[in-house]
Length: 224
Image (spheres, rainbow, N blue to C red):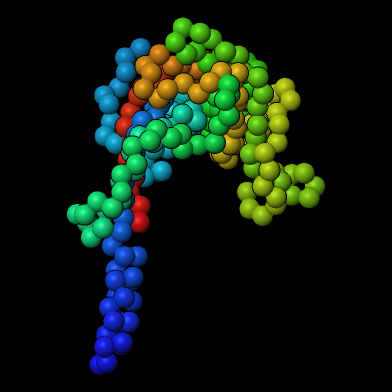
């Protein structure tokens, strides 16, 4: 092999290795919902988006409910080479989800298991550090066909405003809903965060969702 070919082969090998041998970990804090007066044991760091969603799932009567505040905070991002050599470390605190100053978004993935549920975003109340904030507006994210019917596959993905109340008439089908509050995103390290959905997500028979509190928990994920 000529010297030029040897050098070219070496450069190509290093480039390939750099693609497959570089990996990293990032993580930080987020708020985990729970119900009851006593916080649950602090769980281990979630390692995947699925794990994070599972520990955010609640099961009030007649519902399957996932609750998430857009306050997931990344506090570190470390990249490695060949599993041991650090390439870079980023200690900046960065919110991982889109948000705007003065606004907090609470996302709800709601699956009605029984008929009669309605969602009224203006009835939601967020409590942070002894202060209370009423829901200002709500959004439903989903796909709709050309006739305006909600569909599971195909259609056009949109985020539609909820004017007053949204009837959750489709049983056993998840609805991706959001309610917005006029306050800055609360720190995920706070213990004094809760949301009252008792009037916002209820049936004609009355409230079924207890007060939802939030616990600061760690999250971590790997990437290549």
